[in-house]
Image (cartoon, rainbow, N blue to C red):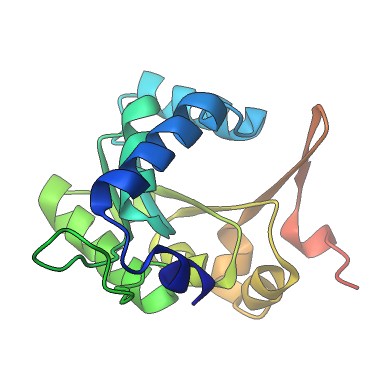
Length: 178
């Protein structure tokens, strides 16, 4: 709501200008684990796709920067004058992400059992249910609890936590959730 209220009435070009500058200045400041996994998947010849709750304009720029094959993000519609309306078509919830996964599956003939999904919030849980290799990256407590409550996802899930300059790989069943 804060974001939609903040951009309502602004012209698309203004927001795209801000996003361009943010990506230019901050786009490579993602986690080492993330950069390494993108590189590994590209080297393996995998399709690298991103599904994010972030605004589609930002997701598009990050996808270009990191050479992703395709992307989905939240859509903030504009009116006929290219000004944001204050509405949103979300991509942060499980239902939307599940739909995006199935669209990508059809578009690229993807074997979901051989696929990886990375996520950090509860909205990513439906993706974890669909793929063979779910990876929780710096996950929220809510996401950890969802995974722990689903025996099938729990069995196949990995956890990566990055703090400062170390990456910790943890078995989900060894996690202590306080």
